[in-house]
Every structure is written in C-alpha cells, then in structure tokens.
Length: 277
Ligand code: NI
View 1 (tube, helix red, strand yellow):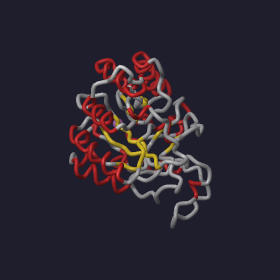
View 2: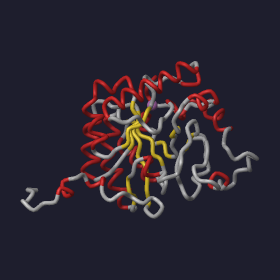
View 3: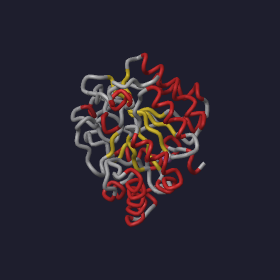
C-alpha cells in the first residue's frame, strides 16, 4: 500500500512490535527454531513477518558471520536471538573450559551483529548435567512440544504435532535448517491463530519471570504442562507450584526435577536434532 503524506511512522512498523503482548492474559506460545541461521531462514522470516508473529532463534555461533544480514534482520524484526553453542557439541562430554568457550564465543558472535548478547541458551540435544548447569551463565530453554521435524521431514506431520500439542505457555521446537519445516510454518501459524494463540518470543512468554542462569525451563504453561513421557523431561517448573501438578505421576519427593537430567541422557534419540545425523 502507498503511504499517504499523513501516515504515522508507527504504521510502517512490523505488526508484532506493537502492542507488547500480555501473556498473563493472552494465549501465548513461543515457536523456537534451532541450528540456523541457514539457507531457508530468510524465507521463514518473510513468513513470520507476513503473519506478524514473533519467534526465537537458537543460533550456532559458527554460522553467524556467514549469515550476519539474516541475524541482523531477526533482531530488527522483533525476534529473540538465542545461543545454541558454537558448533553443536554434546555439552556433558566437554570440560568446563570447553563449555565456556562454546557459549562465550557464540555470545560474542551474536552481540557483534545485534549489539546484544543472548539472554537464553539451548543446549544441543537438550543434554545437561550438573557441570553444564554450573558452567553455563544463561538460563537454558528446553521445550514441551517437539515437532520432530528433522525426523519426519514432512510439513503436514510437523504442522499436526505443533497444532495438536501446543498449549498456552508452550515452547515448540523446530529446526529451520529444513526446508520442510519452513514450508510448514505458514500452516502452523494459521491453525494456531484460529485457536487464538499469540506468537511471542521466549522472553515475552516468561513475561517478567526471573529465569536463573544454569536452570532449565521447558515451558511457561499455567496448567503445569503434560505428563512427560519419553520425549522430554520435566526439568524444572517455571512457575512455583506448577511442577508438582502432573497427574498420575507419583510424587518424586523432590520437585526440582533434577532426575530428568539422567533420564534425558539415557534417551539421546528423543532430544536429538539432525546435527550429527
Ligand atoms: Ni540443535
């Protein structure tokens, strides 16, 4: 559309920058995209922009310089840029110094482009142990909905998982290194929009809640989330009280969810993404 001489500057800003969503009232969901930036990321940004949807990108530091314009665009269009390590190692296999380097180098590469270091990070494969927790100086964002997009490579299957499993406060895992995932996103947005969802960044999803460095979070679901089966562990309830509300699950006697660490490591296939496959 042509802008008339009287057009306010605000009318030209992307929709998702105004107004700030209120996730204590709105049905918010955070769509997250890992392992980029890559060749399909620009198309994904176009799609998100068309729908006025915000998202969070967990980037590999090693890819940032080659796609710096894309990373700059992410930040400029209101998306959150997170840290997914330098080159996707299994962090529990590394020394403290190596973990620090993986995270620190990536922070620097992103800050170089966006002017701001990431606030949150996502450990590759969701793999965590006590050393990782004690070493990583960021809150660690996992997910409660895994689209398994790297496995199905099928836009319809990806859409079905996202649409059927997303709930208020969910963090949904995708990988924008797959063209099939990027093809699915317009359908995911359309269907979740019909269900009344607002698409927000992780930062907006947790809306003022203080996320602690070294702690991990799966979601911000006011319903306490699903009963966790095999595919994701309940690491730590992001809101006090929510973590103990899983139905039909015996009280662990310890609601900090730390048992989940070992459970996840025992099932590497479920937290996997395609990086090493
Ligand atoms: Ni990954």
